[in-house]
Image (cartoon, rainbow, N blue to C red; front, side):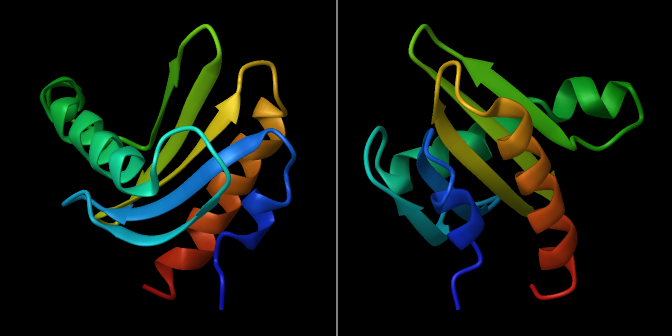
Length: 111
């Protein structure tokens, strides 16, 4: 069963990863850009790095976006996991973001 099949079907998604907050890949799909292991490790590191600011706000990190000239990383964090996608800049950002959120809500009950 592939949890990430929906993300893989979106043309601008280069790579999608479900990872634990330890940065280890649980599942990955994709065809370019960063390797799955690098994307998973960096998403987890970024999420942990934001603990200070989110903690100061009295909140948990829910999602974040990182953009370069060519790519964007969209990530949703939940229950000790991080689900993210590397997309081409200018891609279907809203669709990818909504798909990530919907998948995360479904995965909460399955993981």
